[in-house]
Length: 167
Image (cartoon, rainbow, N blue to C red; front, side, top):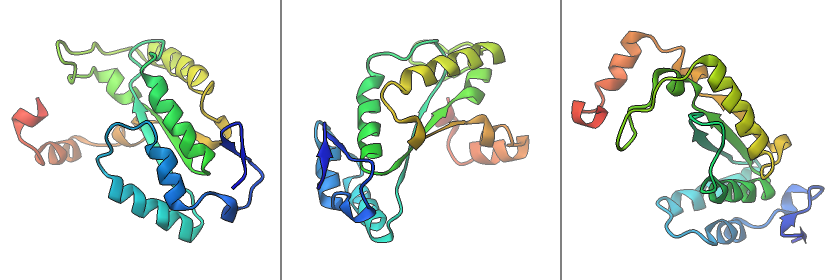
């Protein structure tokens, strides 16, 4: 394996990427609990065999102009995936920010205007690209798929769980 400053050199061939077991060891380092370790192991092995990188996604609602320090833990883990040759998808929850987010523990987050969302989305990108490699990061908005849902589709989704779960 070729390593430089803790990162795999960008000009390596696919077979110079660490084995799936070595990748797993790196990705689990510093993790307190991994809920789907077997699934991650299987996906890393399949990625290795097929020489096809994984797509790893994480979503963030643009409810404030700045990300907080706690996000850095996740960004560092996402960067490890990138350094292992995988692709990161940074999902901005613009659709949910437009309607307000009822998942807050104490109160519902208020809906944001499209201008506020866009401003926050831009600051998120500026901040996240201090850690993540922009060339290996896709930035997507959840409105791409949620905005296309009609009332019938939304009701069918809601029917998949109880009212108590929805609330």
